[in-house]
Length: 459
Image (cartoon, helix red, strand yellow):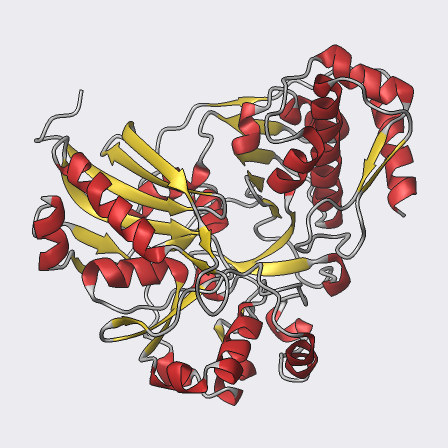
C-alpha cells in the first residue's frame, strides 16, 4: 500500500481517445490511475483540444496522488501530429485537432511546400496528420498569432512547459510524420527554414532529460514537493517502443513492436528505410535514441469499434471459425485517417452477420490481417511484441501467431506500454519488470486460406 513516504512518479498519458494519469512507484508498480475522455471542443475558430479541461483535471488528480505518495517526477506522453504555439502568457491559439481538414486550396499550396518523401520519410496524409500542414494553415489563417508565438512546442513538451515553464524540443514527436524532421540525418527539414519557424523551435533535449522542477503555482495547487521534476516527455508509440531499444546497440535484432490502441503502429527497429513506400503510408519514426525506425500503421482501434460497435460483445473461437467458414470479409478502410489503404471506403462482403459476437469476431480477424499486412510490408522476420489495448483481446495474438510461422509473438501484461515507457524516462537506464508470454497459435481451419483470399480482395 502506498504511503506519503512512498517514492513514485506520475505519467500523464494523452491518447487520441482518452487521457490517463498513472502513479507508479520506483519498482514499476501502478499505485493509482485516473482517466477522462480526450474531448475535442468546437466552440472556437476550429476544432481543438480541451487543454484547460485536461489541466484542471490533471492538477486535481495530482493533488490526490500527492496525498498517496512522494511524487518525485512527472512525465508527459502524448499522441503525435499535435503542436502548441505559445508566448510567455500561454497559448496564442487553441491546440488544433489533427482530424480537422484545412481548406482544399491550402492543401494544394502545401503540396508545393512540403519536403520530398526521401528526405523526411513522412508520407502525405489526410487532414492535419502531417503537422507541417497544420502549422502552414495556421500561419496562413492567423498570421499575427503565429508570428507572436515564442515557441512551437510538440504536444508532450507543451505539457512539460506548462508544468515547469521550460521550453524544449524532442525528436520522437518531431519525427512523427510531421514533414518537419529528417530522421536519417537527425536535423530539421527544409520546410522549417522555408516557413520561418527556425527561431520558434526550442533547443532539443533528450526525452528523459529533467527540464526542472514544477512551478511554484503547480506545487501550491497540488501539494507536490517543490523539487518534483518535470521530464521532457515522448511521443506515445515511441514510449511503447522504448523498453525494446538498446542504448548500447548490443542487440543484433530487436523485436518488432505492435503498439495498439486508437492507432496500431507496427515498428521494426533496425529495419531498412529503402523499402518504405509513401503511397502505402509507410514512414520512419524517430526513436528516443535518435534512430530512424521503419513503421506502418492503421487506425485499428477506431476501425475495430466501427466493425464491432462501441459496446462490442465478446466473441468465441467458434464465432471466429464461423466467420472463416462462411467467408465474410471486412475490406479496408473504416477510418478516414491514413493507413496502407487510405482513400478506400470500407465494406463487408459475404454472408451477413446476425449476431453481435460475430461482428466482434469479424473485427478481430480484420485487425489481425491488417497488422499482419503491415509486418510483412516492413519485412519483419524476428520476434513480435504486442503491447497496448489489443492485449485485452484474447484472440488477437494467437491469431497473429498462427499467421507468422517461424516468428514468436509475445504478449505483455501491460495494456499500456506508453505508461511503462514513461516510467523508464524517469528511471533512465532501468527497464520496468513486465510479465510477458509467447502466444500459442490458435488452430482454426482455413485461417491461412482466409488470409490469402483477403489479400486477393484488397489487391
